Image (cartoon, rainbow, N blue to C red; front, side):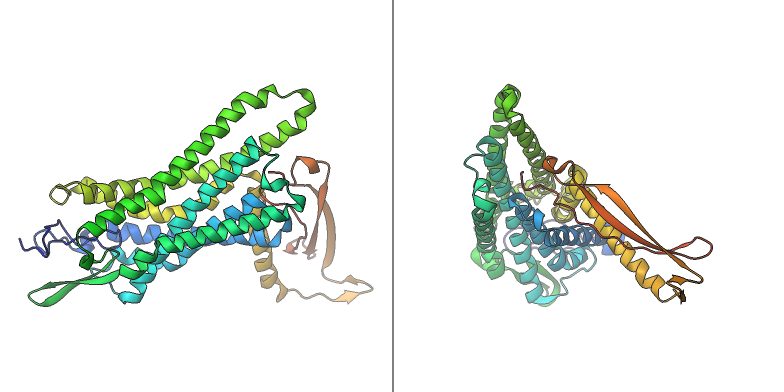
Length: 422
């Protein structure tokens, strides 16, 4: 068995999963791509991730942009999560999905560097934003009087939050500098002939210790330390709620309602955190085992191979799952999301039917078709302070003589999925 470098490896070169050590180029160990199930499963899964991630995160951003009342502190952080997810979905998913299709890296050095850098930036933005969100929820629930949201008109709170977001991106970019600097396309040669090219994030010129240092660095900075900080915040929140919520006097019932509203937001943030922890756990387990267990290359078997692929896929699934989690835990966002999809459907229907609609006006009416305008009052989706308010939604319906619906449009404004009081 021929080896390249000082460390013999198993099976094939593991490229896109950050496994960047030397591998045996043995035809006995190599399995043709066409007979591997991951060759077909991974691209299909990544296509789903791409479609769902684009629709979910773009819709999230559009809802935020189109509704001023949604521009509060927790929503700014959630939109920052969506932007980080869009970064990795657009710049990484299309290329990473082919890692199990092509037997060699086909895109060159520039794409390799962009992919590895964008992936690290996105992970950093996600986990640092979740940490900031957890801190925000802690101060909102445990010490609301000192919370920055209480400042006049919330302007200082917004500026402070935007500053935190800028710092998050700066730190995430700084943590991704090694990937941008040292990622490269490594060539594996046999008998002076290049047989494989692989995108590697760890330069072999920095020695065997460099990958181990980076694996531990990413585990601590992108996973263990942030999750430990988040856990501390949530333990303190739970402790506070257990000791205070049920003991408030009657005159503080308004504060109780506010605490309950903020608890709902905290639960939404906790859902994001749990999804992140679950999605990245297999990846970090495999990386630590592979680089720190001395006999990992000898004991690399089907279990570790499957875990590697699962960790690879889950790390990208996380970028498309946050809107789904928010849809499940937030009724307000669910209504906004459904409304946005309704608008798209109605816009598409209007374009389709407009060219086929022929109306002859006669004495202010139509001879073949009649226009019916209905005003429907729907319950407002504002927070508890707006329970008695309602929004009017206008539907304009065109019907023909047979009573068939031809077109409709609607107009209404609703509040954000996390109310300003939260």
